[in-house]
Length: 205
Image 1 (tube, rainbow, N blue to C red):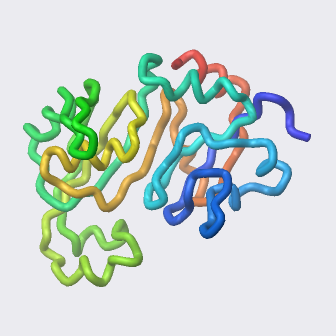
Image 2 (image 1 turned 180 degrees about the vertical axis):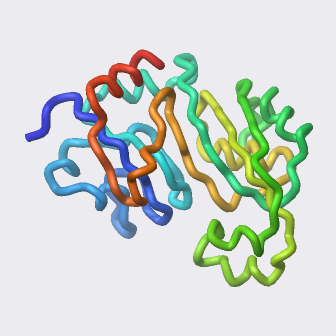
C-alpha cells in the first residue's frame, strides 16, 4: 500500500482523458500500475488534447488548496495558436477578457510572447488527426506564447486566446505554483513528489 498523502506528477500525453474512468475511451489512469490507479485521483483536469504537468494524490484536501482561485496558485501554460497575437492582445489577456462561452470575465493573468512562425514550421505541434489538413496551408501564421493564470475554468486558456482572435492548436502545462514539469519525464511517465515539493506546493496555496 502507498503511504497517505502520496502525490505523483505525470507528464500527461495528448489523447488521454483526465477522469479516472470512462466507458469508451482511455484515461490518464492507464499510465499508472493497478495499485496506484485504485488509490489516486487527478488534481483538476487537462483537456484530452492538452499535455504536460498533471498531479495525482490520495489527499482529498490537496484539490481544494491548489485549485480554488482565491488561493491564487499560478499555473503556467505554453500554447501555439493560429493567428498573429500582438503585444496589445497579450496585455488584454493580462487585464482580463470576457470568455466567449460563458460571458464571464477572467482574473488578471500574465502573458509572454515566445515567437511568430508558420504552420509549416510548427508541424511537430499539430494534432495528428488534423495534420494533413492544416499543412495544406503551410504559410498560415502561428503565434507561440506563455500564459500564467490563477483560475481553472473549463477550456480557459483556449477561450482566452479565442477572445483576442486566435485559435489554440497546441497546449502544454509547464508548472503549478513552484512545481515545474520534470524535464526528464517523457509523455506518459510519472514520479512521486518529494516531501519538500509537497510542502512547497501547499505553501503556494
